[in-house]
Length: 263
Image (tube, rainbow, N blue to C red; front, top):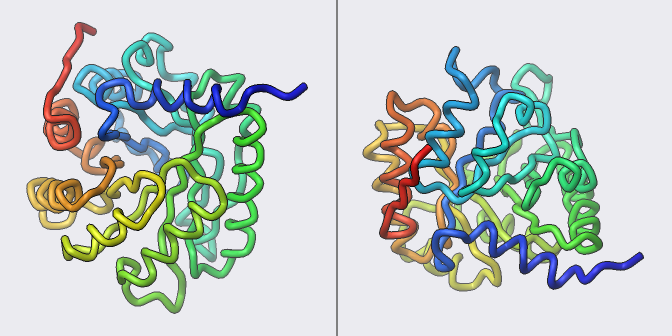
C-alpha cells in the first residue's frame, strides 16, 4: 500500500519546526556509541528534559537510549532517530554501519531519521550507499531525513575546506536529504555561498568545544548570520555545567525567542 509521502513528510517537518519555521535547533545525543557515555553519570532523561524545556526543536538519539527517556519529553520537542554508528575503538574510526531502520524509527514514534556519512573515508562507498537506501525508505514512508555530512579520512587535511564541504553537502541533497548538518568554514562569505546554493537547510555543526563555549557559540552565531538554517550542537550542550542555559543561548541564536514551558 502506498501512502501520501508528500503529506506525511510535510507533516513531520512541521513537527520539527515547531518553534520557528525559519530555523531549527537540534541537539544530537548520539555520541555514546562512538566515544563512550556522554552524560558522565548524569541521568539521560533529566538531560533531555532540560533540552526540551529550554527551546530545542529536536534531539537525536539511538534506539536503545529511548528506553531511558520519558515520552513526555517529546510533548514540545521532536525525536530524530540515528540510524548508523561507529566507534573510536575500531581500526577505522571513520567507518559507519547501519544500526537501525526507518521502520524501527516509525515504530518508536520518531519524527525524522538521521544518517552520518564521512566522505573521503575508507568506507565512503558503503556509507553513501546506506544514505541512498535510507533516502529511498524515507521517500516511501514520508519521513524527513537529516544527513550528517563530514569530510574525514586518512588523506583529509582540512575537512572544512570550502570545496570539500560544498561537495559533501551536494552528496546529501542529490540523494534526497531534507536537512544537512555539516562543519561549515570559518569565513562568513564562504558559508553564505554554501548555504545560498544548497536547496535544503544547512545546519551548522557544533563540533568540538575548542576555545571554550563562548568561542563555539560565536562561531555558530556567525554561521547563522551567514545563512545557516539552524544549529546542530551536542557536545556544547551535554558537556556544559548547565545544559539548559546553553540551550537557551542556542535557541536565542536560532529563534530569537526562548519558550520555556513548565516541566
